[in-house]
Structures are given as C-alpha cells and as structure tokens.
Image (tube, rainbow, N blue to C red):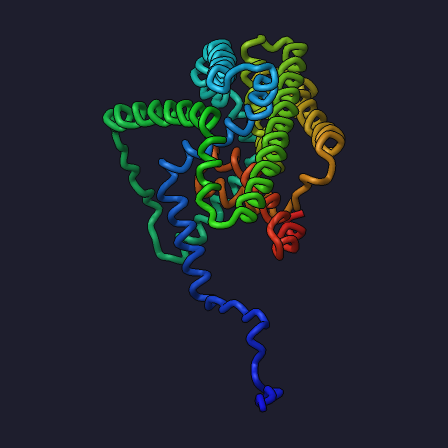
Length: 361
C-alpha cells in the first residue's frame, strides 16, 4: 500500500518563495547603480537625449508613414525640420544672448546700491557675528589673502570639441533610433524563449511607446505654447522680438522641470524686469505674467488634455528632479519626468508591481 503523506511534509506543487536579498546588498547595489549613472553620463546622456527626441517625433513619424512616406525619408524630414527650427531660433536669439551676457554685469553693478540699502541690517548683523567669532577664537583682524588663478586656455580647446561631438552624437543617434528602432526592438524580442512572452512583451512595449511618445509630444507642445505666449507678452511690453523669443525659449525649457523650473523662471523674470524697466509695476509685470501663464497651464490646460492617467505625486517628482539634477545637471532635469513616466507605465503592466505604480501617483 502507498504510504500516506504526513501533515508536516511540504507540498511539492506549491510555488516556493523567492529568496530575498539582504538589505546591505540592496543598499550597495543601489549605490553602485547611482555611481555608474553618474560616472557614465558622457555615454548615457547622448543616448537618453536621442531616445527622448525620437519619442517626441514618433507620432509625427506615424503620420508620415500613413501617408506612404518611407521611414528613412520620414525620419530625415523630421530631423531636418527640427534642426532648421532650432537653428533659426538660435540665429534670432544669439545677438540678444550675447548682448545680455555683456551688459548684465554692468546692469547688476548699477542695481547693487539699491539692493545694498535693503540688505544693510543683515550686513551689519553679519559683521557683528564675525567680530564675536574672532574674539572667541583669538584671531586677529587680518583678512585671508585671496589667490588669483589664471584661466586655463587649454580647457576651452578640450571642452568645445567634446561638446560638439556630443551634439553630433545626439543627432545621429536620434536619426538611427527613428529609422532602425522598430527593427532593433523586433530583433531583441525574438531572443525571448516563448511565443507567449514575445507577444506579451510586444504589447507592453508598443503601448508604452505609444503613450509615452504622446505624453512627451503633448508636454512639448504645451510648453512651446507657454513660451510663445510669454514671448508675445514681453513683445507687448516693448521688449525687442529676439530678446522676447530668448526669454520665451528659456521659459519653455524650464517648464519641463515641474515646480523647480517655474520657481527658477519666476526669479529670473523678476530679475529681468528689474534690469529692463524703471517703474515698480513694470518690474514686477514679467514675473506676474509668467506666474499667471504657468498657473493656467498647470491647473487647467495640462489636466484637461492629459487627464489623471499621467498624474505623478508631487513629492516623487521633487525627489526625481533632485536625484537626476544631481546626477546629470540640466539635462537630468529635462529627462526626469519622461523617465519617471516610463517607470510608472512599466510598473502598471508588470504583474505584482501595480502597487508601486500607485505609489508614484
């Protein structure tokens, strides 16, 4: 007779729990990944920027493909159009940017006497604190000598070709992503062992690519409209058109970084108003107009167009902006939100990770 299984014997049909890695290993792995992202930014940033531009142009490529335009020609048209628009905008803004870089120190030096009266109480308190510190430490009133360092001309000779090479790499990679990205994706999916896994992965990647590209393109269009609206408002304030376009472009770029970008924009426009205009209400008007445009965009336009599907937690957004800004600087601030949206969409479609996606909302 077959022996009956004892109650304490484990059932071989039940799935065994996965072994959990120790907390120390998880922390060390996280630090290693963070250091790798920081150390490899010279390679990662061109690739990520190219993928970002390819995602932005993906809906345009789909429209051209429906018009029976070959993919190679469609990618070339989109890329040349983007480069032409960027070059024309840069050509218009270059004189104003050079003039501001030349005249801003002189304007700020003329503004210093006005600001000195405002910060005079803080300056006196600082001097009193320094006197107390010297008395407590037994130091003399001798000030430390400042050491002047000469600018290194070789640094510019090395940095400029590297920057041009990075820009060329971004353009070429964006073009190749637009042309061969779909074929590369199919080849990678073919490496999966099972047909069911291949079909599941194709559905996930296609839905993510479609939704993220639509999100990125929508945000880009909204930010462009905000920048053009602000440039038009400055033009109505008798600001020259190239200078108005320069500040409108800055506003559009800052709007890609939620919370942090608008805060920097308001402070920058307040400084622009103080330097450009003479009366108090005109000095405050550029910052007020920008704040009103950002409020309308953030509270009405974007929620109506995108809905709540792409909503992200403000706390998670701030943490992501701090992390990617610390890792990659201004480019990290630009890429933080699209990367976070990609992570959220992936987590929504992976079984067992839906709770983490809810955590990001």
